[in-house]
Each structure stands twice: as C-alpha cells, then as structure tokens.
Length: 136
Image (cartoon, rainbow, N blue to C red; front, side, top):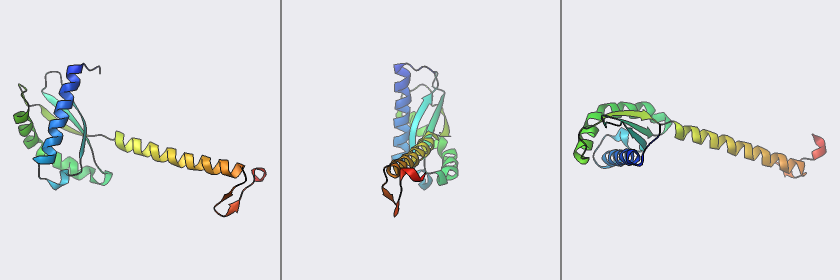
C-alpha cells in the first residue's frame, strides 16, 4: 500500500504514543520488554494495526496481556492524541524480526563453513587436523 507523508506521520505518531503508554502507563509485567515495531492507521483513523515483537517463548503471554489491556491503551491513546475518534487497536505479532534473526544465523553458519573450506583448500590446520586440497 502506497503511503503519503501525512499517513507515515500518523502511523509514526501512533507508534510513539503506544510505545510511551506501554513504557510509562501500563503496569502489566507481561508487557515489559515488548517492542512496538510499527503501526498502520486506517485512512479514517478508526482502526490501528499495532505490530510488536518480543522473545519467542513469551508470544502467548504477551498476546493475552494485549487483549486485556487494549481498552486501557485505547483510552490513554485517545487522551494523548487530538484525533476525532479513538482507533480500535489490533495487536499483531511482527515475526519479521525473528525471520531476520533466522536468516542472519544461517548466513553466519554458511560463512563459517565457507571459511573452513577455504582454509582446508589452503592446507591449514582445522580443529587439530591438517587438510590438503588433494584429500578431497
């Protein structure tokens, strides 16, 4: 979806307000160490999709905490923003961070394997064994 600069500003404003509310206003311990990665506010500002990330083992607990705190967060958000309506908040897990971490780990393993292969081709000692390119 193409975004105008004013729409990007609205999305960023919503993200900042929600992140601030989580940091200073909400006391639920399940919502600590949660990062708001982005928001998508509808054109008429009636709905706000809030994307968040946290540790994989806490996905279920955080989703439950957001379900319970959504009304309070919406109320605090309405007080903070001067919008005509307080948007309905839909909290969605952002798995892009997990996917990026999985890809980075795979690239590191591949780089280590390639480095070990290059050293083996050069006849270097790897893990106590000497490899020669002619052994393969």
